[in-house]
Image 1 (cartoon, one colour):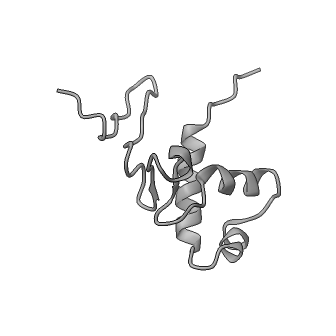
Image 2 (cartoon, rainbow, N blue to C red):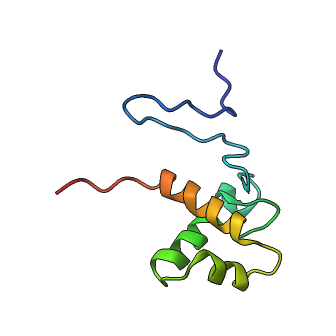
Length: 93
């Protein structure tokens, strides 16, 4: 029997899927919060926002945490790590 809320274990060919409720320690997915985008737990700050601030703006975890009162560096790092895993890997040249 397949439980869709459980993570798919890492397989040799790198197939992986997150838990669809709590994909990591500090993130959650709730259909009615930010249209089901992964967010930092108990906030509306999406992992994609954290990723964009890092990659488009060049901000570090501590700088991003300073933008959001009540969110710490560990939560930012966790959200960024999950987002990296969810984004497609670019093809090798």
